[in-house]
Image 1 (cartoon, chains in turn yellow, orange):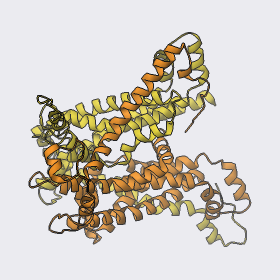
Image 2 (cartoon, helix red, strand yellow; image 1 turned 45 degrees about the vertical axis):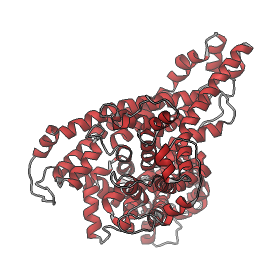
Image 3 (cartoon, chains in turn yellow, purple; image 1 turned 90 degrees about the vertical axis):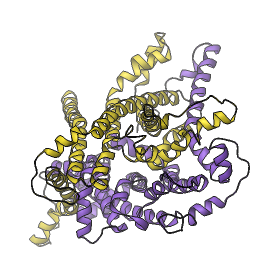
Image 4 (cartoon, one colour; image 1 turned 60 degrees about the horizontal axis):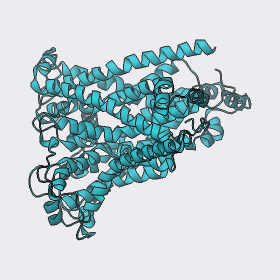
Length: 307
Length: 299
């Protein structure tokens, strides 16, 4: 679109004005190109280089990927991510949906409830993890309190139990994220046509049934969007585990992002750490690429239907 | 966010009286249950910032407080020792503040102009430019740690707050550009066209039309960036050390170290200092916080 510049300007000045949007975007474009493209390729190259404690950019092949997938730690980490990711997403969706439906019942003090359920999202994973560690720890938290009020046989030591510690991470993750799910689902519920609900009500359907059969199915794209965002959070999970369990006991709550940090900065295996980082990127791509393609396809379809 | 479109029915006011009562009791009962679950950690931690250490060690975090004192707050702010210096959490709090404020302002300023340029000035490959910038939102930090460490070293910004400002600005611009572009797309093109016919250029339209419409999205960007950068941990841990670290790293170093004497009450107060600024921002701008979520996630 040509710029309607004032005729008095010189042609050079005019050209410059024509290009203003591009010039304005130049710093960001440069930063994004470096950050997204060059940094990614750089890390990708490190993962196939001979780097160990120090970078050595000579080509070393895909041996580090093989070594990574053979290491017990990584196997445990990605299995943990699978369990954590699944339960965290399902749990957050379930609690988020429940809270959204409750708030949607024209309750009193609506903004107060919303504020309470959403505030964890404003608090860092570090703070969240630290606080819940104290509450879950048998010496300082729930178990101690139950013992002190006289229930001496009460036991609640999941956080120090290899088999149960991961579920502590799941619980804390849900506590942190379900408000996010609630906010988006509630926005969706509010966009549902009231007449639809009224019609179902006249037919004599009960409220839980109306939500299950009529309201929730109409906002399914929101569930897909929330799922994608939460999966992304899950794959990137790092701080929460560091603050809550530091990956332990043993390696029982280790996740891929922790393995990356350890390999790169604790064990001096830069190439293998980079390989693990590339695997995290691959995991994200596995979630995001289909979603982006699907949203594009849906937008196109909708455009055709309405246009 | 579409709100209040279905005022049409009031589910809690239908059916027989007994049924209405049961429905109400269920709804409010569940709400109160979850509210307690969400608030109790905050309550427990705040309470323990006032209790003597000996009492916490004896009774745990979850018990009725006996003696109360505010000295642990002072100890947490300016007293306890970490890595050889005994200045409490205040130097790290300052580090985080010096990192968060410039990075928030810079990324928001760039984001607004970028969003305007990308939504109202179509040019060749503009969707590619937008796509590239947006990819920065999804790129995991792990892919950029080693390159950042190298680049900051070359720029003379290794282990500095300025280095973290640069990192967070570059990463934050992806978010703010995405938010602002999605917001400005809704501004009618006719408005811009009319201004152009009147001879207004890029910056004039920005000042006269776009900026006056921007406050809501500016607030979204500022809240989102401020809380995100304030709470960040990985970059701070990897790219800075010792007395240059942000508060999140200091909290982990202080309360995460497994060995030695634990000072639960002081640690709890330090945790509150780390949580307070984003919590405060959230409480005064909660409505916009939600709007930021919806515009970022659904579009």
